[in-house]
Length: 160
Image (tube, rainbow, N blue to C red):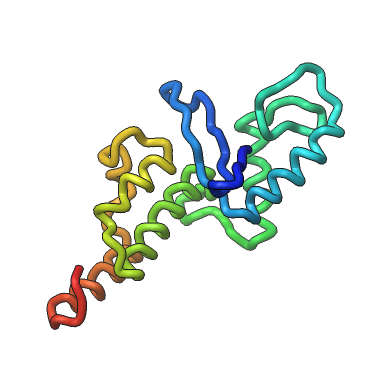
């Protein structure tokens, strides 16, 4: 995690899928939680140095299986249960929900969504906005806000 006096805090994501790296801006409260975590993590027993941010209490990088179990436990605490098809929420589903909610809020705020999509793509780690296309599917949340916005435009209240 990095922070300069001139820019908001950000997280450096290194070598993700297809060997891409990127900077992800963070809310100041998120940055503070990460700073607190890294201070606690310094007390974990480590078997070898690791560039991985999140480690187990034994100093090992977290496995996908461990993350799935943790997310299921958290979902139970929040009273979130599997869908009718029996699927638990996943980190990827949370990522999708974030993208949809961001687009919905931009529509609701009257922002130029088309101009902002490249920013969302970078945040998600996509090289081109076209790679974020599947987040733009016709979800009820986005359709509702877009329909309201278009209705206002149609009666001359605002621009789309």
